[in-house]
Image (cartoon, rainbow, N blue to C red; front, side):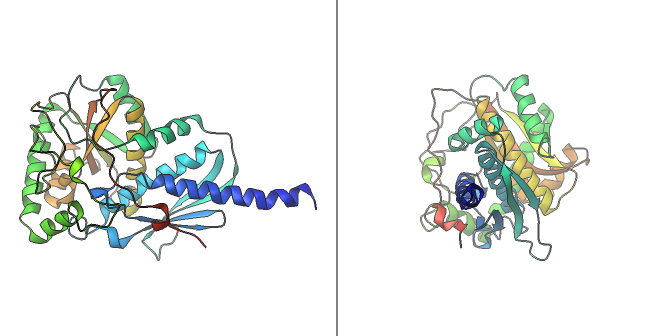
Length: 333
């Protein structure tokens, strides 16, 4: 038997292992209410990404806008894993027009040099977490902001830094959005499910990540309907910088790209000593989403608002949110 014949099954096993590792790494991605609305299907040299409709917020996110964006983050995590392992891949978005839940396909094309920036991103993925405490310290520097912006733009999405007067407009929009949602009993029930004891094991937002009381911030944080165990100071996040992810169109493919951009920007932020807190409430309500678009002079569509702040290297922050085991998100033949 030739060496080439022996190499083929070995390479096939290596590809399956790499794709499995990629899907497992993708499980660390942030998602709306930590719903983890993705599932992966592994076949031969291909990894397919699908929306898991059972974990889509039907009241908060009826168009699956934020679920798709969350899946875009997971897709970027998977790409970084494969690039860091030294694999060349082709990624196709929305590969089947007849199946809107089939979001992407990753196909392994062969070996490639290890991608060093991807290696740095891969190391940052397990470190990423959402910190809802007020921002302290100095504002994010221009060098760090440029690096985050460049990472976002490399994924085909843009980042707008809000001016001081726009931060007050954002605060008004966030408050209006949360009051609008809180007036709807079905929305309150949905939020309580994903932040309570009845949610699926390995998902949702634990009390350890929810502040013990309302934070003193210009832009109100998410009101979860109850206080948690995360201790917060009485400080005001005056050092916070707010940015908006946006793009030229507002279709599922754009939401996927926005998710990849969020991943790239967030991982770059971690490497730069910058914390990221997503504010999704203003994009969950049509009226406030339109208000955000006005801030962009109607040249783009808003996907998500992010609060940036400098981090204290000695502060580990709140615990990481729970995760589903790999066998619940990866289908294998």
